[in-house]
Picture 1: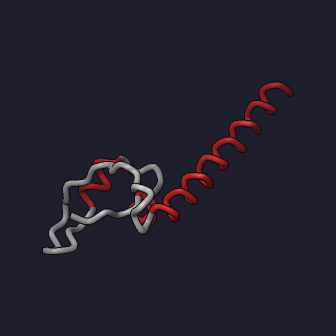
Picture 2 (picture 1 turned 60 degrees about the vertical axis):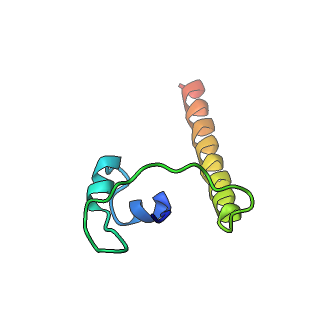
Length: 79
């Protein structure tokens, strides 16, 4: 079992690719077989070595969402 970031998977596909399609295209790192079992994972725990990286990307992702939502609201109010 290997934890792979969704950004890495999406980087190999389009952002509009359905999750099930990502699973079909995923390749097993042990045997090379295509069509792995893929499931969303819980976020890493604070003691995990990837936690800081995960937290920084979550902050950036949510900041981007908030900025887009605020711009959309301003556009709705201006209309």
